[in-house]
Image (tube, rainbow, N blue to C red; front, side, top):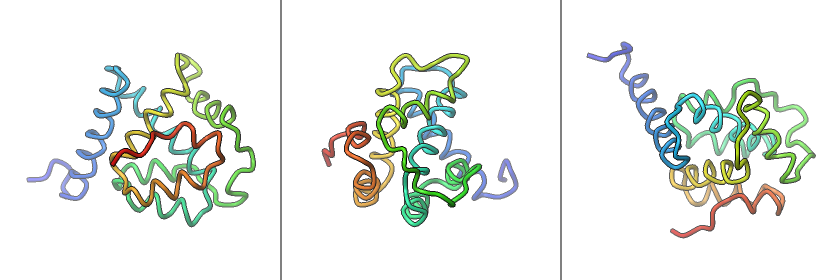
Length: 145
């Protein structure tokens, strides 16, 4: 029997936990809440710099629960944001860590992009990368597959 009553709900919770555990391992953390904040903040910063169409294409490849996190609080009006520097992008992520700032915010964002690179199709990640300005693209991992 399903823990939540629906198999699809159990599966998305399990898959979300797999993603968060993977991110915690990559970061060397043992704090799932912190990993969640990093994933959420990086997804939101990314989403806000994509066109609504590109955001929808990326979200289609996310697990259902993470897709909900991706769209949490989103308004497509005025997107993509015109502020497009690397510092502004990283600052957007860092704002989620006011009480305990990230020690290495650029590397933290890069770690999330590496996770996405491993979980999302190469074609979609290439589209996302190309939608970003050069300075933000530097945070993405080098394609090795």
